[in-house]
Image (cartoon, rainbow, N blue to C red; front, side, top):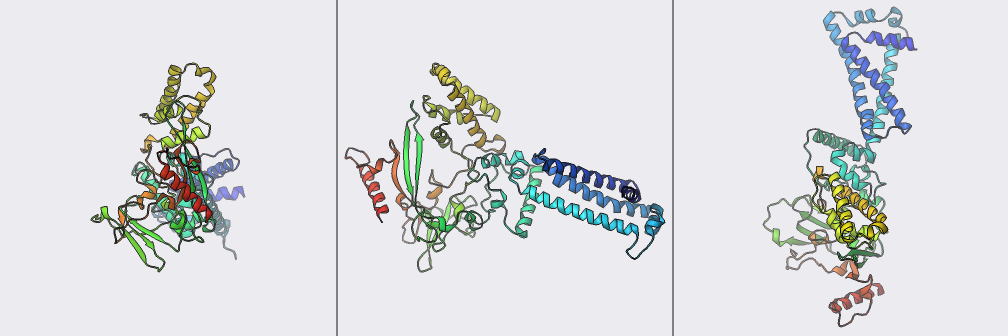
Length: 497
C-alpha cells in the first residue's frame, strides 16, 4: 500500500507546480492530524492553534490539491503532448490497463478523491464546532473582543455559548453568521473596526428565539424582593438601603400588570428611535383593548428629520440590553464588593478610597494596577499605619479586588472606559425606563406616559438606614413622612389584593 501511494505521488508530481501541490496537501494533512490529536488529548487549547488547525491547514490542503491539476495543465502545454501520452510517461502499463472496474490508476484517483472529500468534510465540521465555542469568539481576536470576553466570563450567562444569542438557527442563519465573520476578519486585518465595538442590538435574534428558551413567559410570575446596598464615603462606609418589591408578574397570564406587561403579546408596545442605540424615542405606541394603538409622540423631536421607518416591537433586550457583557458603574462595583466582603468595610474610608482609585487617570492596565496598589497602600500607610499589621490581608485583598474590577471594565486599546456601555435596566440618568416614561412623550391630549414608580415596584426603603424602613410607622418629625405613609400603604394594599 505504501509503495502504491509513493508511486502515485511520484506520478502526479509532474513538475515544480505539481510537486508543490503534493507537498502542501501532504504536509497540511499530516500537520492537522497531529494538532488535532494534541487538542483531543488536551495538550493544546489555545484558540490561535485552533485557527491554524481548522482554517489555515485545510486551506493549504485545498490549495495543494488545486496545484496538482494546474501542474498537469502547464506541463501539457509546455510539452504539447496529450494527456494519454503524459499518463503513459508517468505510470506503468499495469496501472493504465483497463478492466471492468476501470484501470488501477482510476481506482486510485477515486479512492484518494473520496478520502480528500471525507477529510475536508470532517475538517469543516470540526471547524464549525470550534468556531461555535466561546473561547474562539473571545480569544481568537483578543485585541478586539478582549473587553467582551472579560465581562462574559464573570456574567450570569457565562455557561451559555455565544452562538446561542448571536447566531440564529438553520442553514440561512449559519451562512449569514459566517459571512459576517468574514467581514469581521477583514475589518480586523485592515483595522476598519470601531472603538469601542458598537452593541449589535439590531443584529441580535428576537428574544422569543433566545431568552425565552429558558425564561419562557409562563414563568414570569409573582414579585421579587430586591435589596440594593450603597455605601457612603464617610469613615465607616455607612450602608444605605434601597429595598424594592419588583412586580414582575406574567407576560402572558396576568395581563395589564407588572414589569413584563411591556412584552405581553396582548399589549404589544412598539416604538421608533433616532438610531440603533434606542436611547431617544421618536414615538411610542401601545395596543389598546379594542386592538387600536395609542401613540405618544416626543414633543422635543417633532421636527427631527431622522428616519422613523425602523419600527420595533418591544421585547426583553430593550431593557435587558446588558444581560451578559455587563460593564459596571464604579460606584456600584465598589458597593457590590463591600457587600460581598471582598472589600473589608472595617477599613476606614474604604468606599471613598476604592472609588477614587478606580476612576484615577491611567494609560495602560499595568499602570492602572500599579497606581491602584500605590493609592490604597499609600493612604493607609500614611493615615492609619497601625492597620498595616492587623489588616494587611484585608488590604492585599482589597488591592487585588480593585485591580480585577478595573481589568474587567476598562480596556484602553478599545476605548472602553467607565460608562461606555450603559445598561437600560432600571432608570439611571436618562436611560432605562425614562426613555419612554417621561413628560416629553405625550398623546394627542398632551398627556404623557405614566411614570408612577409604583407601577412596577413597591418601595420599602430608599437610601435609608434600614432595609425596610417604610414598613414602620412614620413619624410626623420625619422629613419624608407623607411619602413614607404613601409607600407603606401602597405596599400593604398591593399585597392585600
